[in-house]
Image 1 (cartoon, rainbow, N blue to C red):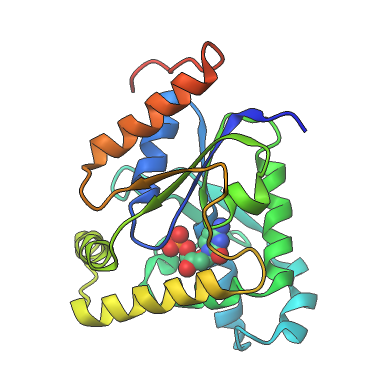
Image 2: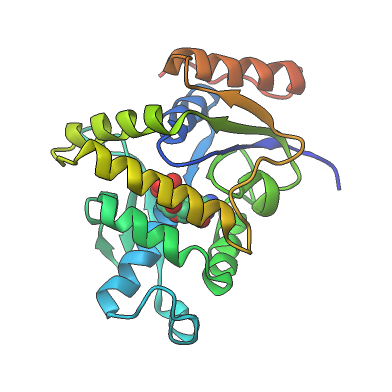
Length: 237
Ligand code: DC
């Protein structure tokens, strides 16, 4: 299979800064940003509201067909990608720490993974995509030409998350947040299907001591180097 020059994958654990970096890289290149975590959060919310235990695959599998999930661009007041779940804007509801934990648990189910993997591949059919998540480079887009894996120390990721949530008006206890981050790391990297893992051909970027600008620069230069003349930066926005 030929490498797909117009797909960039950015994977890594919670709180490592993937979303803001992916958003910036996509905007610089004029690509679409695909936030796959938002999709897992939307599916998690659907089953949370249905009162079904998030590990009950027998009850979840037949109901996935009831879900219609749509990503909407970040709003100006809040930088996160939004989600329309069966016609309802649930962008704010999916961004709580509780919904992150539910998403982490439900994402271990093979039926949920294949349901969302299909949607993600369809969304990327036309290329020009920056796909962010846990299994973008390993499972969903193994043919992507540009793969990155961001990592950072858990305490650093925790303090970044606390600041982000505070900016959204959500107060969290630092130690509780650290425990949640560690639990999500365990769930996401130990599950049997599509675990959080660096693809063999992904470039590892340790963001612990890098600024946001430095991480974006590192990715954009790596893409430009590898793509040669095939990727042209869009006009600055
Ligand atoms: O990136 P995020 O924090 O919004 O993701 C929420 C959860 O969704 C994360 O803990 C694991 C799951 N997830 C996944 O399993 N695979 C992805 N590609 C994206 C997210």
